[in-house]
Amino acid sequence: MRAQFVVSEVGNGLKRNLTMTLAVIITVAVSLTLFGVSLLVRSQVDTMKDFWYDKVEVSIFLCAKGSDTPSCVGGEVTRAQRDQIRADLESLRPLVSEIYYESRTEAFARFQEQFANSPIVDSVSENALPESFRVKLSEPTQYDVVASAFAGRPGIEQVNDQRQVLDKFFRLLGGLQAVALIIAIVMLVVTVLLIVNTMRVAAFSRRRETGIMRLVGASNLYIQLPFLLEAAVSAGIGALLAVGGLVLAKSIVIDQVLAPSFQFTAFVGWDAVFAIAPLLLIVGIGLSGIAAFFTLRKYLRV
Amino acid sequence: MILFDSVTKLYPNQARPALEDASLEIEKGEFVFLVGPSGSGKSTFLRLVLREERPTSGNVWVLGKDLMRLSNWKIPALRREIGTVFQDFRLLPNKTVFENVAFALEVIGKPKSHIRKVVPEVLEVVGLDGKEDRRPDELSGGEQQRVAIARAFVNRPKLLIADEPTGNLDPGTSVGIMKLLDRINRLGTTVVMSTHDAQIVDQMRRRVIELEHGHVVRDQSRGVYGYAR
Ligand SMILES: Nc1ncnc2c1ncn2[C@@H]1O[C@H](COP(=O)(O)OP(=O)(O)OP(=O)(O)O)[C@@H](O)[C@H]1O
Ligand SMILES: [Mg+2]
Image (cartoon, rainbow over all chains, first blue to last red; front, side, top):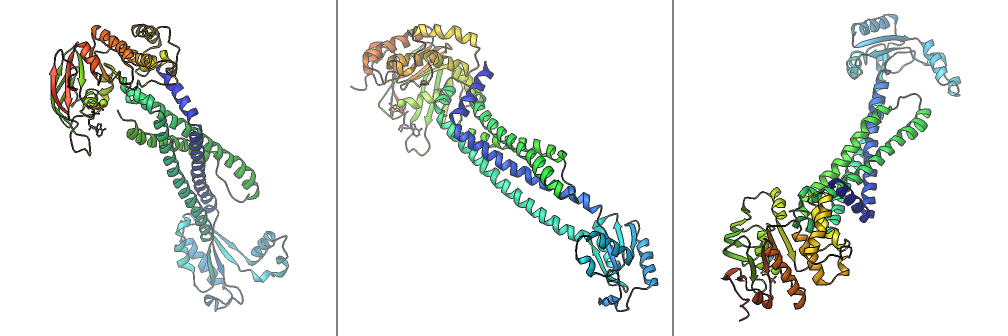
């Protein structure tokens, strides 16, 4: 009896206030989708970091004939210098986890392969590319240790960290994510205000009923429950739509558009989506609950 | 049943208290008229009994409960033992007579079987049998007030509070309503009603409490309306 009464009250309330209910559903859906996407971008950055930091290396380019860097005034790197550099790299283990020497011939072969379809290949001669040590670090963030040990040493033209290039890119992604998150939070605040206003209108349009309920001794919970449930139901529908939006983003935007065209990197998996989805539901319903709680305390007192 | 112990009620931002140092006691089974000019504090008195307002100072006891100490979540339980009737009927326009009375029972969680049994009974008491399926706008004012009284009485409350229940009715209809309230009183319910209707008070010859500017200026056991002089 009680349950049936409450359910029909909620249904009537939602119908009576259809435009407001729709407005709540849509703002909840949009703001939570944005919120979810910003979280997804965050885990995308994490996924890419995991993927790339494993592959990045520090390159120590050695002086070639005619290099005009100050450390190369001695001309082409000597055999003794090269052996010393190798020995010093070995002494940096275990921070240095892999050392690979790339000769000029190998560098040229790799270059030809990378730019196979480009006219640039013909304009570069074998001697133009420097020999180098390619070094992998067990802890990529410790790049400075390697840089300070080798940069500027005679025989070394340049020490290059691929990670720094990646970090710029990740910072850009992080910035985008922060912007999305801020917009999402602003939208969520707007959503809360809208829910508050919707409930105020609902409480006002039903003041006759609630007034009678109070007079005949209906409990506070009983008076407020339909309003609370109404807010929770519309916020819940909005949150479900947001989850749907997130699933679409993953299955269409990521899996069908981005992943095939950017095969060199990894993309977030479904586990990230499944981790975010319940969060969206909780945030959506939680926010409506908080908004409802404070509105009802003010407008539906005993 | 009701005990006011030097009760003062000052509404916020008001210069004069609506009720000042009022002390009185109403016993079980009494029928009491509350009279006095407009603004003298009658509705305020009744709202204090219902715990819609709290006194600024003094103590109010209703049905053995100290309302100053009654916590908020116990107010509904208090109101379930008090029936209320108002000048403006306070019916739900989109519900039928039956549904209006049933609503009061639904919202306090009474089972459907109970509702189906007691609503027709109380509609018979107030003389509305046969009109269960009418909506308020298909009823006369007197009939609408009977619906309100049925709703107030359906739980057989120990106390019935009526704030100018005949205020919107013509004299003939008012007499019918008074007969009904008298009958409810004889069934054991204490009735407290405010009124401006001298004729009714003079006919009924019940206890009369007169307020003026928030003070109790007269308390007569078989009184008349009086203050018109
Ligand atoms: N909610 C309120 N806020 C402020 N002042 C109020 C409030 N309710 C009543 N008053 C004031 O308290 C005084 C008593 O009002 P009350 O309604 O009790 O009078 P009453 O005897 O019922 O009058 P009437 O016969 O016109 O119904 C009046 O001066 C009124 O203006
Ligand atoms: Mg009044």
